[in-house]
Image (cartoon, rainbow, N blue to C red):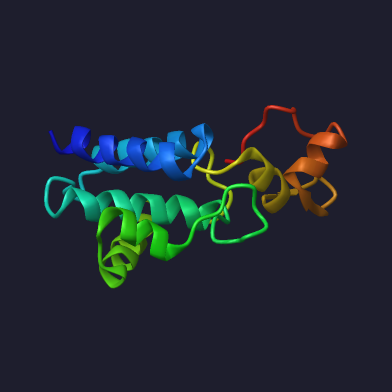
Length: 147
């Protein structure tokens, strides 16, 4: 029941403020979180969970940057879910730590553009390049995801 409540809130928020890809990222993060035994997703308010999940996705995809095609503010997130900023921020940090999320390079939670641009790959000669550059050079398969 809790899973459905939060998923519904995420979908509703996504329809109003996000695009389809970002909405899918929020749902994927919520699914990953509910599968973890270290965090009890049944405790606490559904609105806090939903706001925290959106906050994590927003941070990972630069949604607080006004130059992005889709951008939101922390006030928008908290206002939409009628949630306290401090509580949401703390819960978001707890989620990132529990799932050991890598900023801007987490497959299934980040736009592929950020993964390609911000993930580095070490070549056999020791040189570090972005994943996108390694793909362009033909050194990594085009569909490769960071490990």
